[in-house]
Length: 154
Image (cartoon, rainbow, N blue to C red):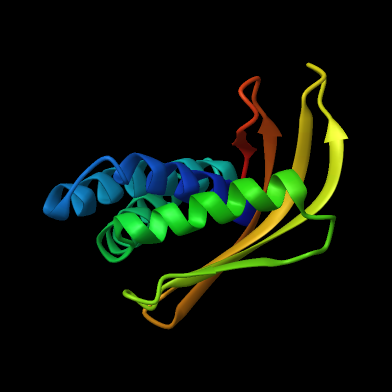
């Protein structure tokens, strides 16, 4: 559950950080990461210490990702993710890579199902490699009325 939560939060952080530039992108990632870490810490335990540790760790990771993934990385990742969730059969891995930054990632859709609202949803596994370091997690995305996919759990 913790990995699923972190993937969704980090995906949200990347989307939000994409709107920022330079130092602001790193700061946005740091703030969003801190909130995500605190949320993750509270999901694991009611201990204030774990919430604080989660916030610090999330701030660091969010800042690092916000700083290291550039606009093209996010475009490659978003395009590949949308196409894969729309077209790829369960278990088929799609890859993206930015030859300029060297960053890359994968997405592997899993089962498709309908949620309580009748939306098509898919579970997925996603990885992102930044500066040779890979993070992997799981999540769920649901198709929106405009045809795009939005992470709802992860």
